[in-house]
Image (cartoon, rainbow, N blue to C red; front, side, top):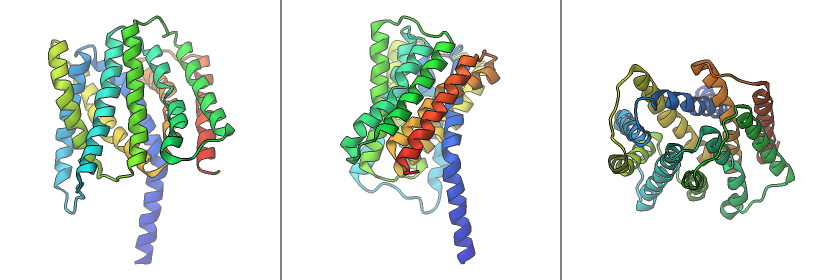
Length: 301
């Protein structure tokens, strides 16, 4: 019996060590697959279809025996609010910002401010303030992201409405991160996912209906893109992000997002054949160094 317990504990430890890397890989790949699919569908329509499929894909997992359901209205409300902030505010407004003329590089720079915002606001939730090395790591990571974006020559002017939408999206993911850390409620991933995607579907369906044609070209590229976005992004990546937030330090988990633009660029090179410059590789190294420093500071290493 003791051997089994030790094995289970070791297995859990391996899983949680691997979880941040799996999250980063699958989350970063979403940019390339979204770009692949958006040639055949409009943004909010794509999100609506994605959320509907993700909720349906998770339904069978709700039939598991001894499934732990939320038992209080506060818990159900927390699930719904997190779903709204991530699926509707973050994804919805970021897609709308790009639809209104903001390019990917400018969007990525704005979203890269999230770890800094979380570190600045986290003391309001945890009561703990970060030291100078933590802030140095965050600054180094942000510098790495900026180098990656500049290397791709994807910066440019954006309409003010697009900028406002992007900053609202940034606020959404930041508030969701802090809220998850604040309420401290643990949720079964299948239950949390179904609630999140049901909320996203319910909010974005009428928005897509009112603002888009909702015409879908069921091209093979779109089918492949949706399969990836539903399984790898919506189910695995977001499930891991929430689980990691519930288990660890919000600033440390948010700092992982610094590695998303560099990884996304490398995956775009592998999937779409887009070029990767030496400056981008330098930026990747700086972002990784920043994340390492943040992790060392928040884990006491």
